[in-house]
Length: 480
Image (cartoon, rainbow, N blue to C red; front, top):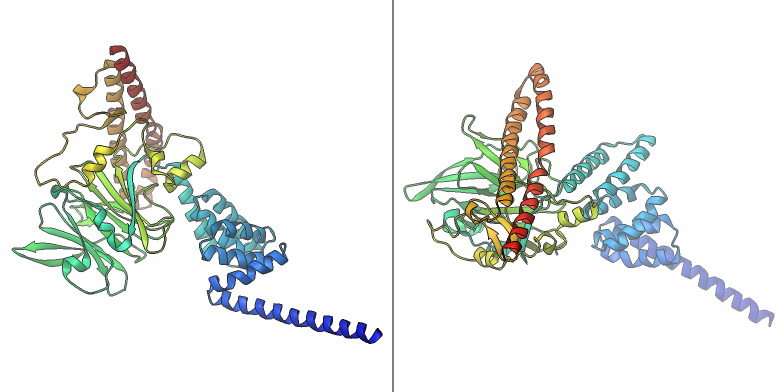
């Protein structure tokens, strides 16, 4: 019996030792795969280790990163938070990225602030973390000011097929892929916009430095030529792409990875200055147009009164979503104090959330896919005033309530004042950037006062429009 007990004890010891060696080998192999960026292969091992030791901060960190890199954000958040609570340094970076990508920019900033404090204590470089913090702060400000855009339709499509979702009226010009327009096999991922006159094209292609830049050509008799690099103000030499020019020939929309982009391509607008033969400093569009992902190819059909843009937010790698929207020239904001509502609208979690009560967009969606020959205007509009289900006013004589008309006139007047102040600010800011120290000091107070005046006006047009709508609805009910 003693011999049997000793044998069993020996076998058990060997088994435990052998199992321990196997465990160490699997961890070592997982860490090797992790360091090579093979997160999908490493993930099951770390998942098993976390189950065995739920409080192990390193296991939580490694598994959380694997989840993040493979798109499993829910599990990534849980385990990265567990690692971050135990001050695992690399968890801060990943957790801040996760919060950022899920529109919780305020939480991303909090994590980064704590991370910077830890780095300072360890006397480590904080430059990268501070840049990420500035980006999170910028994104949070954009969420707070998310625009009240009506997104009336959307379609998920292969990235290579996005232009099939656009149907421009002839008066708005044409779009084509770079390879099709120039009949080339060069692997250039860009589009070509040809203006309504058919005498100018705008496109992007790589320069000698390797980054995409915007170009234009003019039609000379029956051939394209006189290629020019557009003098854009892109100090970081990041990619500029997907240009579109309004019918005024001066207002250009494009996508850029520079100019303060909050993630991948962001959408920008600039205007050509004939006096300086240059474009003004690009102005970044707000949310929901821009996101932590790639947002590009914004196009406006001024005849149809509609626009499109593309985003790959929350989409598989080879897919993108094309959104159809009603342009909001007044840049009205979403009226709510609830941050979660603003985040949802900014992320476009549901296009229905952007719809006006009782509005019917069927005709507009049909119009979006309709060919309209040059010179034919589908709807004559002074404005677009949505009253309710199937009731949209486009002219002053359609408003029946005198009170509603007066209120809506007030809304229009304030919008014009806002537009005038924005133009004034644009000129002041340009003069500020070009001025010397004394000139900047003179302009500073004027800019601040103008910004404050603008801030007090921004919410007023929507308030007056809401009152006008209610007055018209009451008037129509009484009249019935």
